[in-house]
Length: 210
Ligand code: MN3
Image: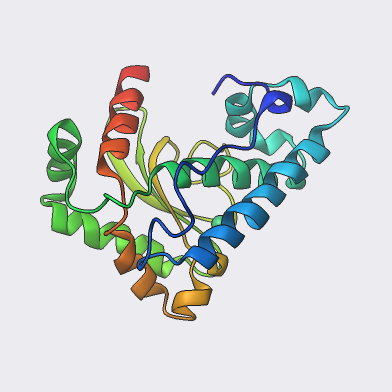
């Protein structure tokens, strides 16, 4: 994460486009990864090329995003959010988290089911394009939020800031081919492919970094 913006690479997906079928279809995955994410990555590199922004650590850029042009906010957020999103999905996903993450969820939201409902509401009620997030705040507690466009909890322009440990893309490009206007069905399907082992790791890393 201390990688300079100019040294960022376009990540491997890590699984096949059809790996998340039937919950997320192969065509959506292919277009989302090779076109949408790739465009954010390329546009970020083009926006910083030949400027001092190219030599800023990516995380610092995100945390101070209000200082930078809108193209950097949109495409930098787009690159970060998608890179995180791909790692949170698995053909062996679903079920429930365990250990410290589950304890923290129950402490904050009373039960896993209540947490699921609150996170789903954040995803379903985000107007237009954006993301739903679970984050670790600076006091170590969990929070759920949603952000417009490609903003994320690291950015100094959002209301609820923290370290994102789970994020759901609710742009139409993430679900329209299979679900059309039925975003709630896509959000419901997400719970079958979320990789809790990965969220647990991000949670533990976030707590250690405080
Ligand atoms: Mn997307």
